[in-house]
Length: 168
Length: 99
Image 1 (cartoon, each protein chain N blue to C red):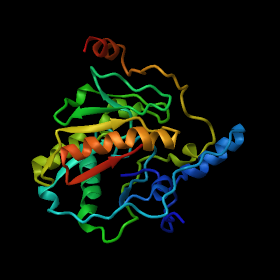
Image 2 (image 1 turned 180 degrees about the horizontal axis):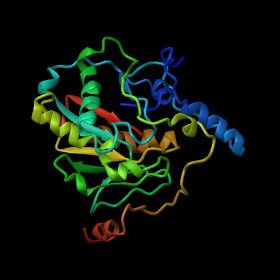
Image 3 (image 1 turned 60 degrees about the horizontal axis):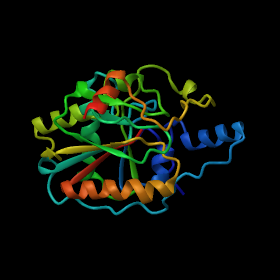
Image 4 (image 1 turned 60 degrees about the vertical axis):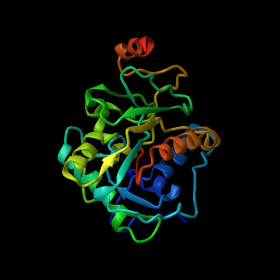
């Protein structure tokens, strides 16, 4: 069974909410990904202060000049240089309220925080690029066969010590 | 990082930091860099401090205004799904065409 929230934490249960919402709309129930076993637990080879960190975010962030995401199971991704000007970051996503992300893209793509952490010595460095895509890809087959292998290849080529995943 | 307990618990990553904020703010509030740094730092420190896989660390931050009642309303909040690029700004489309 998935881990239950601790007592006293009043979560908004997005899986149950989607079930209820689909039932109300008369749609078939969406089958969420469920992994009974956690992914491999790798202990760090070096301290965080020396680690290279890769940022991977699903909030539909693109850089001005890049093609934006489309909203029908778009399995493409964007490579965003980690020295990008924050003012050049944009968002395109069909399933969350982007009002705040368009005021400050750091709410779904914490690049300024990570750069400040490099400057402060909390982390060692960032990979040359961050990777972004648009979540809400309903086809798990397309996700696992198309997007994940490409992202994995890109991440491996940059040789980070740590990958920070920022879903929306 | 996560702002959705149930989805993260179901996907079961080796380490997770849960921030109880409305969707679209997984990394903090807008224009609050100090807070964004706190959150990213807390998430990344799990690389060193987590002792077993599949745990979800709850961050202490609270969204400043009530939001859960609205988030729990059963309405389809998604926008129409076009299969053409959806630019934030018209200029972006021209810039993308030029490169």
